[in-house]
Image (cartoon, rainbow, N blue to C red):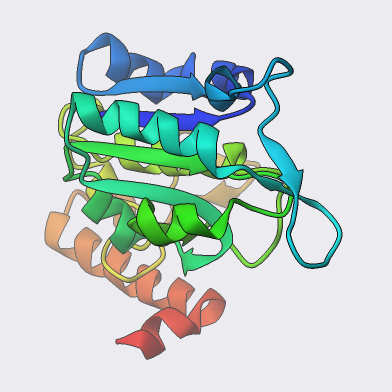
Length: 226
């Protein structure tokens, strides 16, 4: 899989992409992550990528030319399954969408800034608009990092335990059940006996019951969707 990220702050990805699962996925050759500085495509000596909005309203808007030229260049080199704009007014991201995106070949993530991007980019280039929540960030970089992490960990071979991602919260519409590890007794706080019993069928039944219970208590909306 290849993910191209269009940004005016590529250095913001140094931390998230240089450690842990994403780093190992790149080293294994399971994913390619490419950062593109939008400023490099600005056709002015100051590398400016924003301008005042026509009409009225405060705030600057990201210009169409640098972004359009960059996307055109990338599309001339390969086919993209999705060109995604990270924006507060996009569809709210969830595990189902992460699963879908993880099956694609090539995607572009466009990080917005200021008051957004020229609407013509959304009309003629963007194929999907995604929000990671009902709040506003200073830019799309953090949202793009969230998407990349959630997608990459689902690619077969990325995680050491192939069943790990399948048991994550939301994969089956439920929150994950409580988990425990050694010691079995700490300060009198004991691991539930059923988890020490060795009876796999009973353990799985208990885990499902706890997952449903936790979901009912904390996210009843997930059960209502079904």
